[in-house]
Image 1 (cartoon, helix red, strand yellow):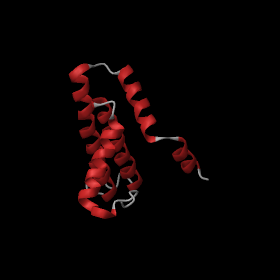
Image 2 (image 1 turned 180 degrees about the vertical axis):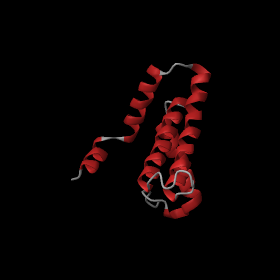
Image 3 (image 1 turned 90 degrees about the vertical axis):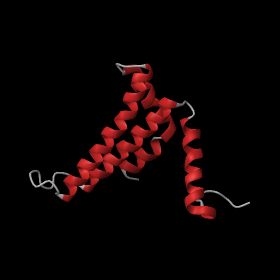
Image 4 (image 1 turned 45 degrees about the vertical axis):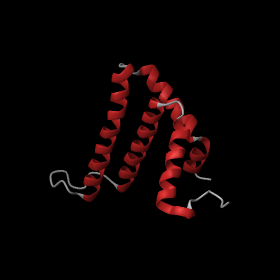
Length: 121
């Protein structure tokens, strides 16, 4: 087993999201509505970093050239996902249930009867 596989097995998504949320809640300089809005705005910042990495990976900025790799893009996309899940957890302690319910709805609309992980009848 590789180190990456070992790490993947050691981390469970939702307890890790809860731990990150707890850590952020204990260290944030702003609370209440302002803290919530800033946490959600962080998602836009992370999405901008994805765009920057894609531009860097494709060498689209002539001044910088190829400044990023596709692995950088992967990492930035992961940051977007993590930030979104923590923001969702900030909105509701039932983030796991809200996310799974929404994912199931999207899957049903998009995949119809071929939703992975769901048995028929």
